[in-house]
Image (spheres, rainbow, N blue to C red):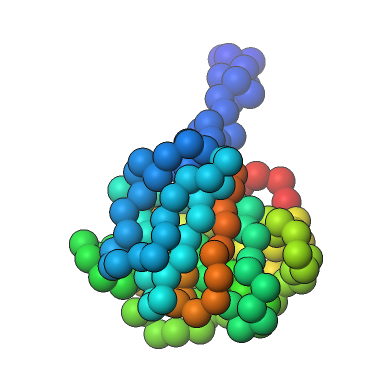
Length: 193
């Protein structure tokens, strides 16, 4: 009996397969929540430009997950973007969390409609290059990573499930996203750092 249980556990996956949040060809699955100047798929990238704070969100919802993406920031020093997760709300600004994507506090965690800054820890960006952002959310624990290095690690349980989103804060040029994907995680497991 012990051998059977061991084999069963060893064959079970630690996590589900990755779900591509962007198919590389279209904006299918993404909905702007207000007017945007540009939101299009270009050569395997999502390009977003707006003249006011805008969120573009998915219908896909997850509670315990790992999500990652690569971002190329425009040259404007004060440019601000983010990846939202565990969000709710049918229109306008979502309510949930975001990993900050900017030069000031990259990798920090902001509570959108949930009290503001939850962590101002910051990672290190590579200028004029693609930067990799990653979030692991398991139960009330949220961890962020920038370019493979840990940044924030907090406990927060106000909102434990919701959809994803990307942001353009309304000032600056086109922000480019690629390789957006997520996978569900069983609460008792986590991927290797």
